[in-house]
Image (cartoon, rainbow, N blue to C red; front, top):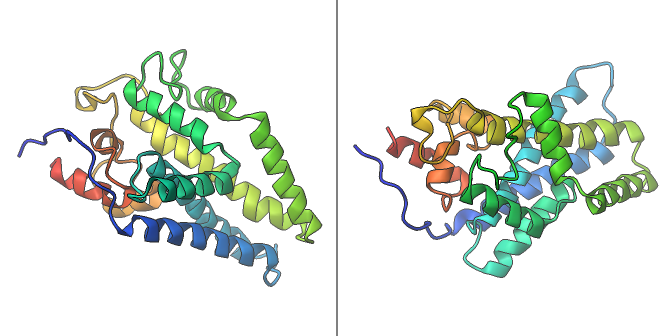
Length: 241
């Protein structure tokens, strides 16, 4: 069956706000328990195992903000924007409005000269990641993150917990998002299957797509149907078969 391009975005699903707040709540609840709960022995693997779900939830936090950029969290524009701002602020003190502008530019011209996500000078992972971070990191964001860090210290949270359970998962989630959402989908050389969005996609495996990056690895499908929320992208993938 031929897969026809979407002519207009699907309306936001009524479950959008519920799932968005579930991700935000799970991220915040797990982090609060790790920072203020019973001490975990650093010599055991247990505290380090908690880093993985916190990393995954941090990734989900940004994906929630990303869905809001496409208007798929709520039909109410104010609610949609509020959820997006909250998710992006909690993730890394990011400016939601600035992200919206840059993300629209990415969708208009993926891998082109006006794409803020693409590194035209080279395709090596770490140089591209470095350029990406320099392009998106701002002094206000650094100030916000420093303030958050010092507030946690002021509240009496041990510095080791802050570094391991908040900073480390956030950094790992940033690498994860870049790898599955920018580097893998858009790196060159281009293939015929990447047309017309200049994007490739993970092979069909819904469980891996969910665990790896909240279905963001189905990236061709996201560009094909940007009005589809992350938790419906598997349907777009199936429709392409």
